[in-house]
Each structure stands twice: as C-alpha cells, then as structure tokens.
Length: 158
Ligand SMILES: CC(C)(COP(=O)(O)OP(=O)(O)OC[C@H]1O[C@@H](n2cnc3c(N)ncnc32)[C@H](O)[C@@H]1OP(=O)(O)O)[C@@H](O)C(=O)NCCC(=O)NCCS
Image (cartoon, rainbow, N blue to C red):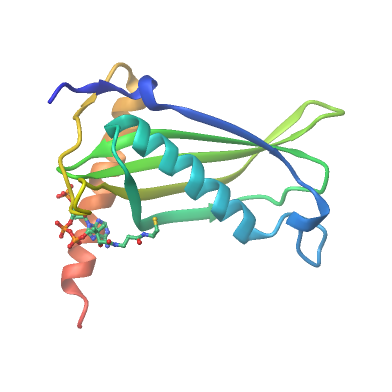
C-alpha cells in the first residue's frame, strides 16, 4: 500500500460560538468542542485511509482556555501516527476574536481511529511519509502515547 504525506489529509474547520453552544457561564460548552474535535479528526482519518473510520479511543483532551460567545473557532486536525489499522489524529482548537484578530489555543486533543473494511472489520491503513521536524516530533510523541496507553490497558484489572 502506498504511503501518504501528512499534508494530504490535513483538515481545517471553522465555527462561530452561538448561544446554543454555550454553558451557564456563557462560554462554550465542552461537549460542543469535543464533538467538533471528533468530527475534524474523523474527516482527517478517513481522508488518510480513504475508508470508513470509527473513533476507538480519546487518548488526551485538554481544555486550556474558554471560548466566548461570538468568537470564531478554528479546528485543525492532522495525522500523527499509524499502526496497522489504527490512526492517531492530533487536533488543535483555537479561538479567534474577529474584532481584535486575537488568536488563542483553547483545546488540544489526540484521538485514535480504526479503518473498517466493507464487513466492518479493522483493515490496513497507509503508512505516513514524514516530511519535517514538526511531523517527526508528533509521530514520536504519539508512538510513546500509544505504547503507554497499551501498557496501562494491559496492566489494569478486568
Ligand atoms: C473499532 C473496532 C472495530 C476495533 O475492534 P477490535 O476487536 O478492538 O479490533 P482489534 O483488536 O483488531 O484492534 C484494531 C486496532 O484498534 C486498536 N485499538 C483497539 N482498542 C483500542 C483502544 N481502546 N485504544 C487504542 N487503540 C485501540 C488496536 O491496537 C488495533 O490497532 P492496530 O491495527 O493499528 O494494531 C471496535 O472496537 C468497535 O467497533 N468499536 C466501536 C467504535 C465506535 O462505535 N465508535 C464510536 C462512533 S464512531
């Protein structure tokens, strides 16, 4: 199977925080952000493998700062690492105040997706072609995260 560049599957989405997206503090509801993160990451994974994908694990999700009503939300997803049928996607969410052009990173997340064949079983995905130092760092960090999570899962009592 031919390997693919990280840049071939990058996703950028934009949203605007409307009243129905907010919590009682009038900032964005975390579940709304999680949904956008999952959608952007799923599109990135599907674009990498050109197959249907499902979310199998949310490896990390950090809420760093709130997003205010009326602000723009920029969601960027890129593939960090692949196994045999699994893909780790990194997502960065930023808020942009449209009046001052102020941009803040508000959320960082890493999710694992699995590619499915026509019978709904895990199927092989293309390898990643690393092209620069940022992609190399993300690949090595994701590799460590995957190994640590696997070790933890295996070590936990059932
Ligand atoms: C995805 C699914 C088909 C995988 O089935 P499975 O029996 O675990 O398959 P496997 O054991 O062969 O694992 C497949 C891959 O997923 C990875 N995986 C499985 N469980 C995982 C977990 N909890 N965290 C991270 N990776 C996991 C495996 O390491 C393997 O990776 P590899 O092929 O790159 O080595 C099954 O778990 C499923 O259907 N889950 C529900 C998905 C879903 O409904 N998501 C929500 C809506 S999108």
